[in-house]
Length: 195
Image 1: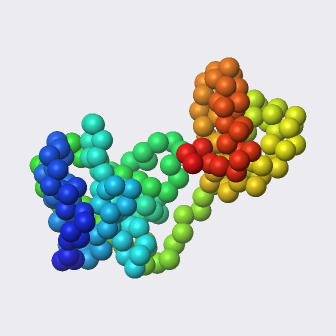
Image 2: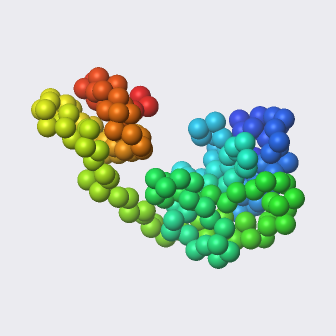
Image 3: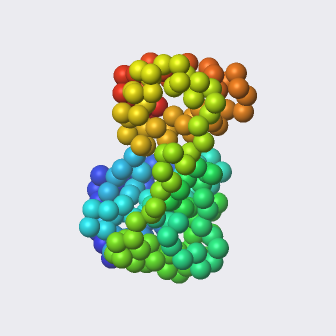
């Protein structure tokens, strides 16, 4: 069993509704030999410095998130795509520590499969930015403002996708227009949506 990382202990010691489930998940994952680290404020488990799985919680459930889950064999049909826009990661969700305990052998098999995927060198083939829908409201601005088009094209592909998803997720044209207007200054500064 791999060692626990003291800088992560606080996560398992804090009093939450998922505390017992978190502890059981930690034991299962460390039993597979991964290295424990703290990333994004949650326990993240790595193999040779590459992220494999993390533990996180929400109001309704806690989960294991497999970074390359889309490449894994979903033996028991329990991997969940968190949102429609998530391309690589997949979760296994839990609503109790008892559920984790009942599934511990299955969960170990999933962690071992995630390790095998990482060792194989397989990479997730992400959609290219041009495959994301271009909202009409943003296209109009790009056509009218050549400097905006230049600034947008200079952004990293991830930042471009972030903006496209943000704009197109609004249902009403008025909301899309408002989002585009608010984001133009950030795009012109070379910043991403969350920068």
